[in-house]
Image (cartoon, rainbow, N blue to C red):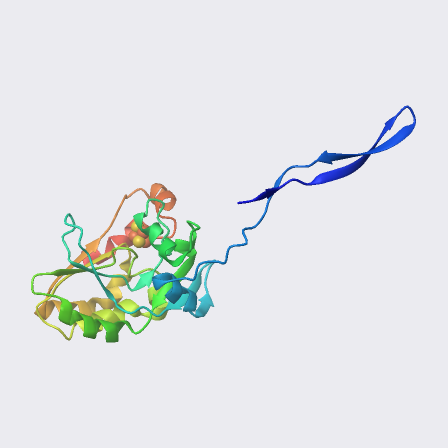
Amino acid sequence: MKRIDIYCPITITFDGEQKAKLLPMASLPLLSDETPKPLVGIARLAAQGEFLQPGHDIEFFTLPVRSLLNRCDVPRMPFAWTINPYRGCEFACKYCYSRYTHEFMELRQGVDFERKIYVKQHAAWMLRRDLKRVKPGEEIAIGTATDPYQPAERRYGVTRTILEELARHHGHDLGIVTKSNLVLRDIDVLREISRHNQLFVNLTITTLNTDLARILEPRAPRPTCAWKPCAS
Ligand code: SF4
């Protein structure tokens, strides 16, 4: 980055004689005159997203992705594929390792992950097409970089449409990870899926201390709510 020195004219007096002098002010940075690089990949798709509506300090956008299934080649992970119905997560856990995923969309403020939620479009259609790529025995994990039952799901129902599509297929190994009791809403379709597929629903309960939970997971359901699906 270039810098430029700016001089400030002042008037000083010696024995009644006035003289002008230039004193240097702080150096200021100049904006780069380089042309911004064009956005590519997911950043370009995110920039094309349409504003849906604001929520409680939250903004929602469409995200026209090309595929819903993402390959996971990390050997220590027990699943081969992931599905994340949304990008970003309103639950805003302080320890969330997924915040970096917003940087791929050139959104580099840490809070963007919890305040700008992207809603994937045409999820069921893409899943129907992509499921042909899954080999027998390969597990699909739903909700590895977002919570599929965060508040946006009440409005947009992307997770529900994904589950309804999965209920039409047989022989898959599926896992869902969530902190929300909203999963109870879909008990009917989860039962239908489990008739012909192997299905695990994993509930994350970090702590039973409500005060600590409010600090660590400010907008996630209270621990007492998270227990409800366990009793069903
Ligand atoms: S619920 Fe999961 S994805 Fe959402 S902020 Fe918390 S850790 Fe991240």
